[in-house]
Amino acid sequence: MTELELTASGALVIPVGSGISAEVDAYGRPSNKQGASSRVMTTGFVFVIGLVVLGTSFLSGIFGMAGGMILMGLLLMLMSVPAAVVLHGITQAASNGWRAFLWRAYVDWRILARYGAGSAIAFSLFMAMQFVPDRALVFILMGLMPFLIVAMPRRFSPRADRPLGAEACGFIGTALQLLSGVSGPALDIFFVRTTLDRRSVVATKAVCQVATHLIKLVYFGGIISGNIAETGWLVLGVSVIPALMGTSLSRAILERLTDVQFRLWTQRLVLAVGAVYLIQGLAAFAKS
View: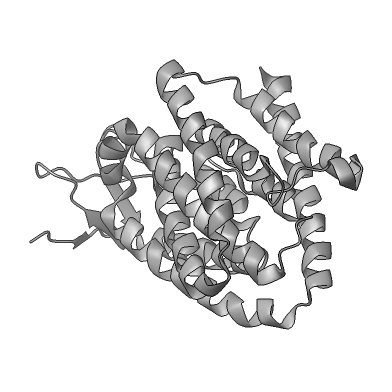
């Protein structure tokens, strides 16, 4: 049985195999002298991760979006990119899976099947090409997309309930997920103008997101095995609990919203998230 130790500063030492344990900096990153193969998580660090996951899961539970992008951004401030991808994928799969279960009666399974077809095509292409484009370009394109869609006449706007709409949503959503780790805003573009009510939108997007996050975990299989230890099983386990809690707490808020309020605030969030992506992309492009 694994024994946990406390350092003099109150840090929680988690052995990661072969008797190795290490101290890290204030952000939970392994110190240079100890190496990246080991991890010490302070109780404060674990608590912060829990709060972040709780808050973002609550937000996503209401609107079916935004929480994942905010979570990824905050995780990248606290840990390495591979570890953030692993933790983000597991927590989002758990959060969306629980959301889909809570609203399972409202899932549009036909859209999910068509979404899966588009996802499979994107996954196959990425596995064949192993292509990774410039990160700045990805963020710029994701930032511009919501504004271009809103400016587009309604009769031409992409919708998941139209012919080939769900397939395109699955392809684009999965491609963006494998490129940048998040794809929520792209899915919202395809769902915000559908004829589905708010509960069907949240439920159907949730099952689609579960499929996409599982694909991401499979695609990044090479780094998962090496970064589970870096992230820490304790953090991975603890993060799932607030993900489920935030999703459950959001249900009452979603029930109180009208479909008009839901679509209005969803569109505002889509544009706000797009603006954040655009700023990130331009900042990264300026540094390159």
